[in-house]
Length: 336
Ligand SMILES: [Zn+2]
Image 1 (tube, rainbow, N blue to C red):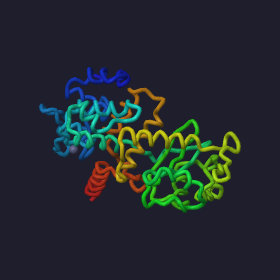
Image 2 (cartoon, rainbow, N blue to C red):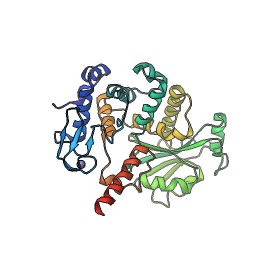
Image 3 (cartoon, helix red, strand yellow):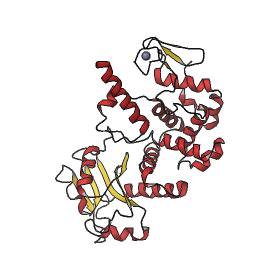
Image 4 (spheres, rainbow, N blue to C red):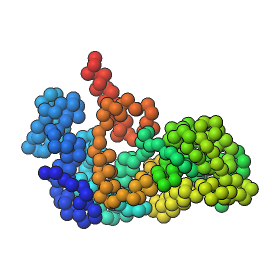
């Protein structure tokens, strides 16, 4: 039985279809293994068969495993139906869902809602393969501190006024008519930001920034660099030279963070950024596409290629880390 995800274009369509836990498990199995046999997560063998209790047993290593092992649903006490609904609500709403709202919608405790929201947010994240090209706007934004001082601080040359003691800096890059990449950074010095630009923006692209000296090295690094001089009131020197796109994203981000989440802890800030980036970057997609995409991320297990890119991935998600370490340990023992 093949499940077509494009049918889930409304919450009721999803809820009607996934009316039992078994159907949820079948969807996870399909997403993980397609029409093929289950694959043992411990030894990679495809000689597995399903037991009466729905779990699988591997003929290779005799291990027993469930369809959710290695997914975000592993060892969960919450029903899969509620997980699927939560994922649908998070992926389909424009602004996101607060833990209080989700707790009411799913009749769960706020603590549980908070926990699964963070698990779901951990699925987002910029992939290393993201490349911005063409015309790219860049800007920094500071969260926290005194908002009233912000515009003033942008006028000040250098790093003065960009104190990160009370404010958390976020650096963003927006490809015009394309995607946005943004991340929490320790500081907004040129030497911190340049490697990020080099990683995500194709050489030869035209970059648009404000006049801050932190962007002085863009030309040296192979980019065309045009900037707006806020201090001299040259807000728009030519109709193309502006950073309105990325500033629009910041405005959207702040609206969401303050209206839906009220406040965001510094430790989890990147997850909120990732969630909003995902919304922004998939704004043209349908609700069913976004749910399917999220579902795919939720059931995806790491593989050997993920281990190879371990050093380049900024990944603090404990589940993924745990699995990668386990995989390394496993590979080591297998070879030895
Ligand atoms: Zn096995």
